[in-house]
Length: 308
Image 1 (cartoon, rainbow, N blue to C red):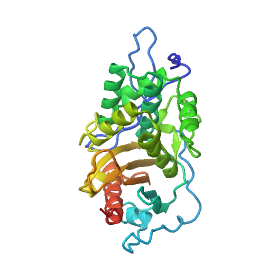
Image 2 (cartoon, rainbow, N blue to C red):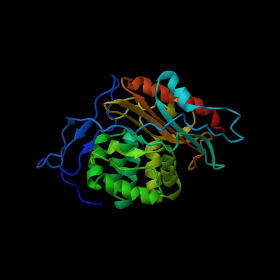
Image 3 (cartoon, rainbow, N blue to C red):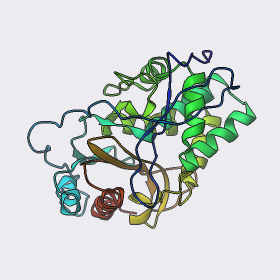
Image 4 (cartoon, helix red, strand yellow):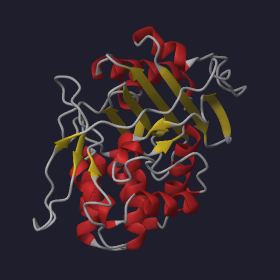
């Protein structure tokens, strides 16, 4: 793994900086020289968010076996959060069918979803490191930003980490932060690329990495390290076995709340039938609470498609 970059080159980013009391500004964490790697918080804002895709989202696709249920995730999200933009993909892994596809190639700020890439990258370059494995378990289960800050810097920053993972996983719509390289939450990502990330973890990653990642995602805590309730979306909408990675973050213009993961209605050990990706972006002054509620309603809307 590349050596840690200097403070001038790379800054860490708090990507899940909400509390249960409401949205908080994102925090930029500059590395303090001579502090032994400690970081301190300084308020900052993101660059402008990606432009919304023109027009309405593409029609949702369904398989013949999807019970004839029609789902428009963006309409569902807008019932709670007017003018929100949503993307959704649901894949039935048994048949390889894309049950839902909506705004699937529209870029969103990844927020803490980038921790999936940071974790896999670190594990690939330091296989078998017990301390690193414990750190990554905590980072994924609690969506811990401080650990991500450290691994982002240790891995060489966005161009290095995102570059390696884009090549390894075949990602086509994922880009490192453009204007502030150290702000990992500024990574751009698409719903289709998140499907590829989950496919890589489940089907292509070395066995130890697959087990570590699925164990952490399958035991995601109810509250993140910042005390935000992270069982919105998928875990609030389905009773089946799941392995998830959530994200909640904001900038000066929008709140973004994402729920992504794997679901297996039959609870089969070692296998996952469905991949569910739900990405949402809400213009300010929308609250985290309303954004998370809309993500849960989106998950409830697609839940009937997840047949045993």
